[in-house]
Length: 288
Image (cartoon, helix red, strand yellow):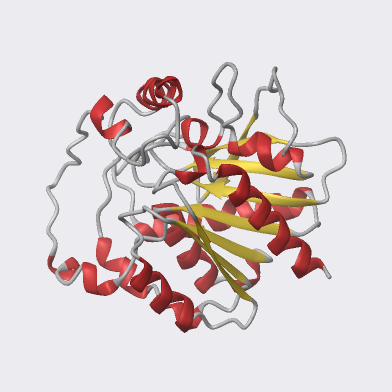
């Protein structure tokens, strides 16, 4: 089992420039880190509720789990999420999200030249893939969890239209709890804490446009060593689509890990420690 921290340290907030826009990047680190990981959150919620959930009597922070394994951990709030403001357009696009991730990876590389690994959850896995397709050397590996993209699922993505102004819809408690669908995988106390933290960090839903840019995603163009993780009951990452993606990856350095139990939010559920250990094993093999 991983060490349990009763009093977890607060993450350090950094500000990173990306094309004139200030991005919030959170950091936690052990005394002597052996590598670095950048975490990219999903479509609706920002870095702190997703990756640093603190619940009394429970060990759920993904950042703390990675720190316990010896990694310096960064987590990015994308534009409009958490502590990062929207830009003047009010919209986020796949290309902006990928460019911002690359800017943060370059900033991390400038601070520390040790190995850098990229982890993306859900939409974050798509952002990470797009970024590394464009700059394969920006990270030493990519870890994708809850990967939702498959072009057959979005046949009309090129025909989507968008309003002149972003809708800025309010996020809801129901949406915040919606990914937790596996009975017994997480306590109600933890779900309630996640809902509270999510709505405090992200009261308004971020607005994406230009979703046709996701059509650039092409597994065969991924040359970075890759770890694809799927949880057993994840409805957004069906196994057939994952197998298709995995088979097409353009790197021979690739692992596929299926976690029993858990769902799209498995990094906060009972498979959490096995996911952490799978990530650690993958990185250790790359280091050999």
